[in-house]
Length: 165
Image (cartoon, rainbow, N blue to C red; front, top):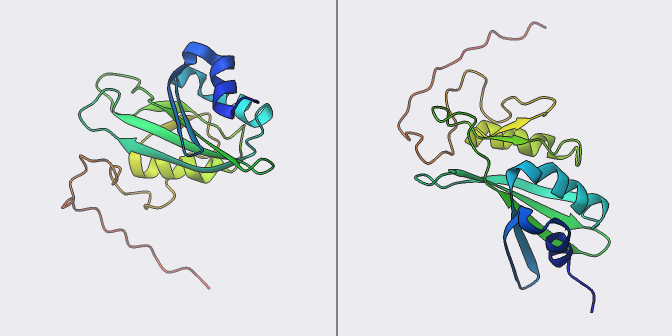
């Protein structure tokens, strides 16, 4: 019987995989943030996960580390799915901006997914070629999908001059 993608990942990376589970064909591996790019590259180049279908963030307010980045992968040829998770740390205790290496070099399509995670949750992707807001306007203060973002917070109203014709 051949090994599943998750079994191959665990066999290759061992202690880098901090947790794993598989249920109904959905395989998940939690990995250490320092190995994020290396594991993703292995998933693409060796395991055949050629499509990053989604990247999002979960906010575990009150826990440390607070944020978990979740990446969903798909292998077109084998129709397999794999989920990678990691919990990036903030660079300084006083700073709530978690930092994680960008996967742009592995899957260029994560460009917009990482920008969305930055814009809405404040996870900074180191090495990203164009990390700027994608949904909110540049003057927006904060990251609106964080659980501690005040729902009644007022934002500056920005009026732009009409475009010249």
